[in-house]
Image (cartoon, rainbow, N blue to C red; front, side):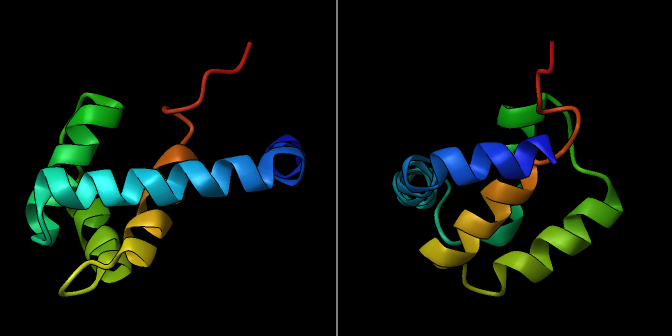
Length: 87
């Protein structure tokens, strides 16, 4: 897909950004999964997450979010159709 091609071309750059971003997210929202989920949905999508999104996001982040689980969560947010701007 187009997104996979972008990832292959920019994989190292994107991985570095996600690494730095996960650290910044943990500093800003702390290790509380609920505040992290609410805060990032508002910041990235300008809306509250649905109940289903909260459940899935909680599973991805775990009880105590780590930088790796936050990176996975950020990647999932970035892949949502409403986050992407396609011309």
